[in-house]
Length: 268
Image: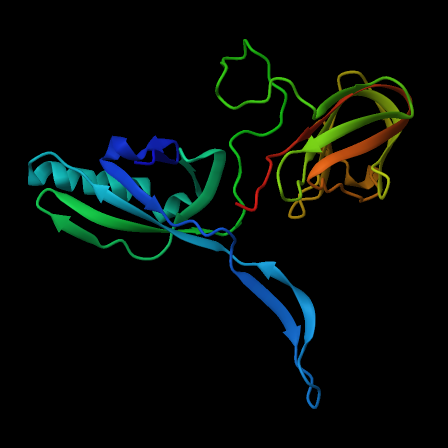
């Protein structure tokens, strides 16, 4: 039987045994097209993915008492309460990934004596699973131990001390990554180029300053020490394609660490 968790809670701890997850290989497509009167066929404007919907087929196991059965049902209801919003689901046969979704539909239980069969409908509004941990560099001794799927040797963090220095970061997912770029240290008039686009931040920073550029398309923010500094940028933000991206940094007197923090995203 596949081991599973929801919101960090083991299914087994609330009496649930996962028999099967019906996660489709790809989310359903949404076609963008236009029909023109008098013309055969249609114009194709491409396709996008819609939400990914899947079912979790489970058995709800209880001790030999109606009281314990009702307790298990209440625990299950609390775990999948839709008012919690999206929660992470993990599955032992899909390691190192999490599926962010929430209960969506109905949850009838086919009771069998003191057990019951239940199917949980789950909807992922962002259809792509992502990595269990993000790429932020962490060190042993921060309360972490080996085997927790953190990145201890990072190819997403680099020390820059020379103008014109290049470094290569790797997106190990199969979908585009939208990083939070954290720059800690000093420079004057910084530009970062991936060969196709150039991001700039004007002015000077000191050794203890932190610039954070959130490249997610729903955010696109620039902050210096937590304060809005969008006007000091040229409003360009990076997208990291799967695989390697080489970035070149130009600045006067650079002495900073740059880090690309995000979760890898996957088609499946």
